[in-house]
Image (tube, rainbow, N blue to C red; front, top):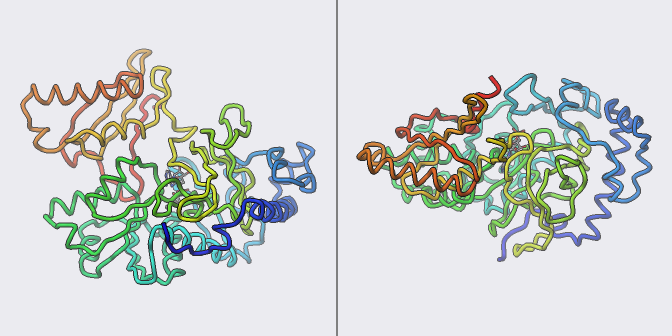
Amino acid sequence: MQMKIWDPQHETMLREDLEQLQLERLQATLNRAYKNVTCYRTKFNSQGINPEDVSTLADLSKLPFTTKEDLRLNYPYGMFAVPLREVVRIHSSSGTTGKPTVVGYTKNDLRMWSSLVARFMTAAGVTPDDVVQIAFGYGMFTGAFGLHYGSETIGAAVIPMSGGNTDKQIMIMQDYRSSALVCTPSYAITIADRLDSLGIDPKTLSLKVGLFGGEPWSEAMRREIETRLMISATDNYGLSEIIGPGVAGECQCKCGMHISEDAFIAEIIDPETCQVLPPGSVGELVLTTITKEAFPMIRYRTRDITCLEYETCQCGRTTARMKKTMGRSDDMLIIKGVNVFPSQIEEVLIAIEGCQSHYQLIIDRKGALDVLEVCIEVTENIFYDEMKLQRAFLENIERKIDSVLGVGVVVKLVEPNSIPRHEGKAARVIDRRKL
Ligand code: DLL
């Protein structure tokens, strides 16, 4: 498949050359971090490690991990490797509990970030001819600004809509002839629902591509978004601690998200033993930044579960590709002792005709037993169906989920539009056991 590559020099490197570049950049990063960040220096010293001890990429595995807890302990600026005077932008993560984690960028970091985002946007098919509607929330969240600067770097026209106000999003989309949509996948479904209820045919819009990310979504959800909005939908992954969007993104082959390995070294570890796993294994993604000046992250535990593939993609890029995340090592639900990823339930639901893509998992404890309730919005005709038909529909879902998860769940069918909508990331799981 012939497609434009934004930065062929770095996206199609021979592995040998890439590894040499990674090692040089890693060594420079370690020296800077050791010299300027007390947290790294203390950790390295306590393990008797000196940056000079890293003479091969394999030596990376000797270094201590960095966790969200380290960032909390060093709130707000303790992990910065440059004086504030050199910082030109501050963002933070979208955490819901406690203090957010604060991240900073120098001028060079912003330049690098913009070009990393330009890479995956180009890979998804965005060109200078496009009109990009950004429906991520502007603010401390990295999503909107990352894609904003990436679009401008490509030369596309940006509409900085921000999140929410779905009717206005649709009006702008129609009037300004937006050709690319940027938002969370769950918000793309909300837009599709609203188009339906307004009776607007997606054929009358100018949309051709959608760049979605910021939260997990399944292949089935991609198919739904692609058919309902009549676009090509790609997935892109990132986290504020590392840079925001721009860590990895899909090309039009849609067979994994290309990691920008000249900027990040990716490892997969067993989240229990913390041992590095061989290529192709499923485990927790650990990332090390090797170009960032203001906020270098060394072996940051992302908690995202995935797996890496190293074969050259049909698009010509040689970079490793990460599979869609399969959940998080910390939000994995354990129901009656069984490990459950919400994405597995989503796969089942979306494949069933009549189920909408809006659902919520409510976990509670009755006596000593965990109970997982799956609330699913269904289409109106099913919701108002005869009791008997509705019962059969519900039991079918319960059976299907049971066969995939190996654990029984209680399914509750709810009216269309009754699950609260979120303009950003969907809140899919309510765990009442902790209350
Ligand atoms: O969500 C950065 C981003 C914005 C990426 C827009 C892509 C597009 P945070 O708010 O720090 O940063 O959240 C990071 O969100 O550790 C994952 O668990 C999850 N996540 C992000 N992208 C994806 C994705 C941004 N494509 C956390 N698939 C990460 C699955 C994702 N999970």
